[in-house]
Image (cartoon, rainbow, N blue to C red; front, side, top):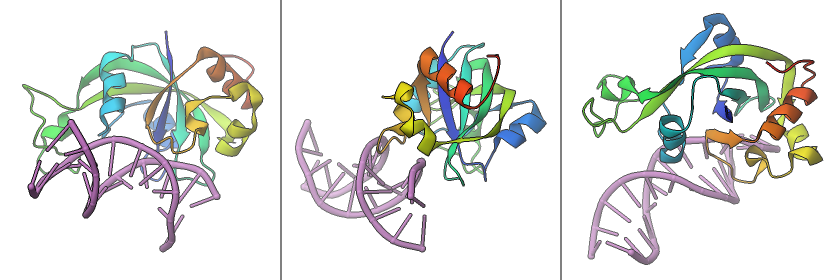
Length: 156
DNA sequence: GCCAACGTTGGC
DNA sequence: GCCAACGTTGGC
């Protein structure tokens, strides 16, 4: 059982969209480090923080659960799709995705500013300067602190 | 919308 | 395999 933080711009897909959908594939990751995490490490049952990037405010919006481990991103095979990548084929896929399911939405966004200001979250990757990785590992401790800060009484 | 930080590409 | 140019991310 592992913990993750996954970023998305809410203008593209938000925690509200996920709540409405119930579950979704996590599409369009085109970064090798993030791909490796999704392909090799994420397991069903893992929990992930849903982070709104490029938002007002940017911060953690809620929690989701990994419900399907990494599998080839078929959107990379579709020449008409914006996530198309000619290097990726069904025989030799380059890009992967996972499926996630909605767990909870925080009462309010926990802003990045508060994450940076919290001593117990010292060293958390998302608060580091120039942290651009869209899928990040997260310690259980940091996950729990963030859920507590967001005012949740019980962990999922 | 700016721009710093970073990842990727491609010429050599 | 170096590294400059280019593209992208994401806070502000």
